[in-house]
Each structure stands twice: as structure tokens, then as C-alpha cells.
Length: 461
Image (cartoon, rainbow, N blue to C red):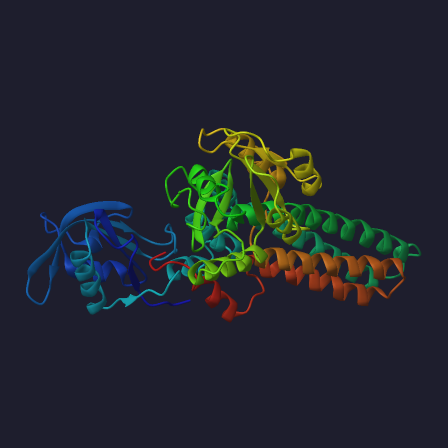
């Protein structure tokens, strides 16, 4: 596949120690050579692969020095894209690095589309589609556990398992074809029937194991949408600040201080939470606060986890009981805050309303109870333990959907075998399962889907 030469800035824009402009393609080295001048006058076209060189970028039109640089040169196929790759290390800044990029484009390269370097790695067979998606997961990882899952997928953990299952199905289909074509043995039908059951059951069990990790994997990848709710002035903003460990929300004794939804990511024992502090849910005449309350009700419906905060120093109110009703059937941790004050709440009634869900007491003012809360969050979703190094976690919604469809196909095949359906009909279900697994790694996937997936990447990756 012949592709043109692309270029992009591969580091975040802004001031920094260095900025990197990356080129990839057949003419990458020749284009860089036009602009680069080394003190020794040695040409980049003549240097060894995987070497780095000091010099300057020169504007060929004026012969003026544009930037002092270090140039890394890597010849394909031993590169990320399997093409010739040049990385120009500039001083970190906006003006000079953009000038270098403009000169590269003026001399024959094209500005890369988002994710196009990774897309070329996929198109050139360097990685499969699931590994390519793991690159973005690694960039976006917000906890060590999420990072470990992404690294495992980048290294081909999921790919190898999917390829093994596809090979099992392929070999099964081949055996079936042989047995159909050469039916001279009396027991061939029984042998085929037994082999189909064993192989299909094995594939189904392996897919089921993968899907069992999907909830935890999806949480590690995307984070838990966690909403803090409660009456005004029970300590919701203090809870947000305690978990984030900085003052993100204004804390006062005045009810209704939080007028809007405040969002922040926080790592709680390896569980990434997208923490949302809401305006206190209550009836109010204040127009601005009322808008905040309506937004609070909206995010409540979309939440994965609810942190319902009550006041240890006040009796349960009708509003508190209404909040318990509003979160019925959802994952909830009840937090009874302000234990540094005199007890006025009926904890037995709170536990009754919680209906078996965790109840944690805290004094956020004195920083007590936070460890117990973090343990409750971890235990609720991960049973307190995630072995991200030992398991192949499925974290991508696309992969989960395809695995679910593949499991349905293999189950249809097993039902057909059990019902005595003709073998050629069973083959259709097995083939469908094989194709659905192939879509995970990109063996059978539409070009428009590939374009859509890589468009979500950052520019220069």
C-alpha cells in the first residue's frame, strides 16, 4: 500500500522543554534533509537508521535559521508505522514549532489527520485494530490499573486470545467439511456431532470469561460517573474536596452555595471516578439555584454510582427520605457526615432505608471516615480486588458488543446441534461467530468504521 508522507506536531501545544514534529512516509527522510543542516554538513539521507543528529532547520527560500534541533531518523520497517519516520525535536514553544511544521508541509508533506500515524501502523500490519484502540486507552488512562489494562491490550493480550478462538472455529469448520465430503465411515456423523459440541462449548466458555471482565474493564477505561447528592449544607462540596484533595468547590455554612454541577476526575484505590458535585436537591424560589437543582436531577439519572450524603447532626427529613426513593435500584453508598457534632440522626432508620447498601460515617471537617468510604467504593465494584496483571480485561464498548454477538452466534450453533439441525446450517452460525470475533481485531471491518475510530485520536498520534 503506497501512502503519502504525513507530518504533525506530536506534543501538546504550549510552552515546554521540547516539542516534537513527526514525519512518516516514503519521502520523510528526503523532506527533512531539505530543511536540516548539520555542523558536519552530513546529509540525513546518508546516516544510519535509529540515530539522532544535532543541527538547525533552515528555510530553503531565505537560507535563514528557523530553529536549533535534534533530529531522530528511523528507517522502516522497524518503526511504529513501518514507514520511514523522522522526529524533529525543537525547543518547546508555539511559534517556532509551527514554523518548522509549515516548512515541512511546504516541502512535500501533508498535515496528518487525527490518529493517522496509529492508523498507518494498523494498515501496514504493525498492530491490529484492538491494539490501535489500546493506544488511545493508554493516553486517556487515569489510574495505574487502567494503564496496565491498556498496556496488556497494546501488547496483544486480547488479540492473541481472539485469534486463538478464531483458529479453533476455523479448524472445526475444516473438520466438518472433511467429514461431509468423505462420509464413508459409519461413525462419522456421531464423531462430527461430538466434536462440534466440544469445540463450540469451549469457544462459548472462553467468550463468557472475557465478558465477565467487561464491567470492571469498562469502569477502568471510562471511569464511574459518580454523583454526590444530598440536602443543602450536608457536606457534599466538602466530600468532593476531600476526595480530590484540593478545594475545587466552595464550602460555606450557607445552604444553596453550590448553584451548578461541578465535575472532577479522582482516583479511588484504582477506581477512576468522574465525580459530580450537584446543587442540593430541594424546592427553592431562587431562579439560579432552581436551574442547578434541575441539572442535578438530570445527572442523577445518568450516574453509575450515587454518594448520598446525610447530616449526623440533624434528624432525617422528608427530603432525605425522598432522596432514598429517587435512587431506588441504583448503586448507592450512604454517607452520614458531621460525626464531630452531636448525634441527632436515627442510624437504624438510615440502615433500614439503605436496604443493605453500604453506610459510612464521616467527619470531613476532621478528615475521618475517608478510608472507609474509599474501601466501600472499591468493594462495591471490584470486590476490593482487581488482578489487572493476570486477566485479559475487555474494556471497549465496541469489543463488548461484538463479543456478546459472537456468544449469541455460538449459542445458536449449540442449540442447532442439540436439535439435530443439518450441519451446513450450524456452519452458518459458526462462521458468523468467526466473523464477529474478526471485527474486534480488524480482520473483517468496514473502512468507514476504521476512519471513525481513528478520528477520535489526538492529532500527531
